[in-house]
Image 1 (tube, one colour):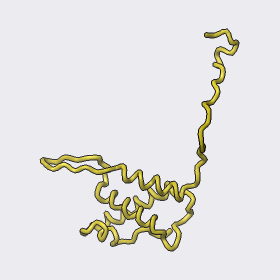
Image 2 (image 1 turned 180 degrees about the vertical axis):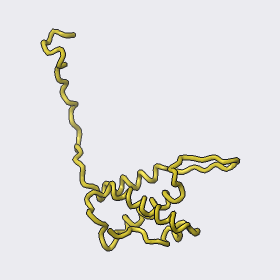
Image 3 (image 1 turned 90 degrees about the vertical axis):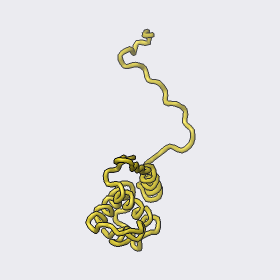
Image 4 (image 1 turned 120 degrees about the vertical axis):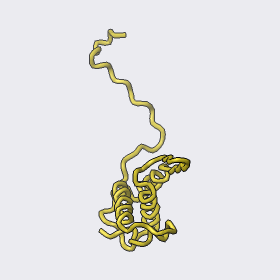
Length: 126
């Protein structure tokens, strides 16, 4: 399986130097997150589609900048906040495009009929 994001691309995207060992881990995490929702792909397509590359790069930056998955952190007078919604938006988009096509209902359906209570089947219960 080939990499979606190559070593060095994360530093260019973030516009600052990154630790090489942490970069590799962040890229692997991003690819793992994408792999979990792109179930129609048995391997990464070659050439890499732009959307998969962009999603992987952005997810890698999320993993690199916030390895604990925190929503916010305050130290002394410095407060940082991260949007965890973006990670989910990317994974939802990837699943819609490359997911295995889970069956879902389309349209409006009436509510399911209520079945008789199995304990009170005689019809004389309230």
